[in-house]
Image (tube, rainbow, N blue to C red):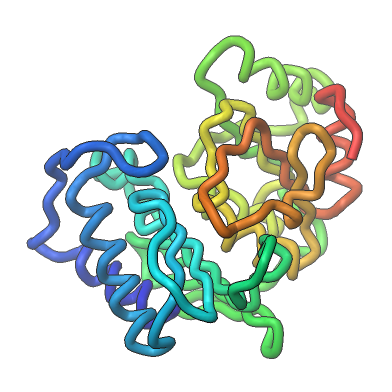
Length: 260
């Protein structure tokens, strides 16, 4: 997975990148050529190491056969990438292919920053590591809330949280949900909230697996543990909350009117 993400990023940083629209991906969002090329590079590299693998991707949906299943977002933060805003990532999670395989079954995951030489990864045997950045999980999280809204209704949960926290917390929207969740897991931010009903499991499966390993908790806003979300096909997520730890995640849900 490190090789796959590194090769994809090498392409994304090259002069060969095309931002030309090429239709709509499986999830219904507009795809650009760089999304598809990055996906092909990742799949080709995974097959090189694993032989056959089932790919679950934002662009192509579900394809292939094999004893492994890879859930992939070839460019998380593609709007940023197209605009030249330097916050985007390649996200890959890998699990044994089985019936009802879920995020908690992910055995290894990689979230690699496109614009910096930084890779976050873990596997169940060796734990969490980084490449290019010496960083550890903070003992106390920063007073930053990472969140997204695109309508008055989806902004309400953020308003409720901000009212309860008051001026002690800052709201930021970075543009890459995978990196947002990694930053929460490392303690750079307190939590992450997205109530737009636009996120998909391919966007955040790898980062949630890493965050869960580090001690963070992720929920759907109905209180369902997000690690129980299946990864054998693409799912849209209505509302997601991730907290630095379970007490933060539960508090955020309570302030939004939900309970884990």
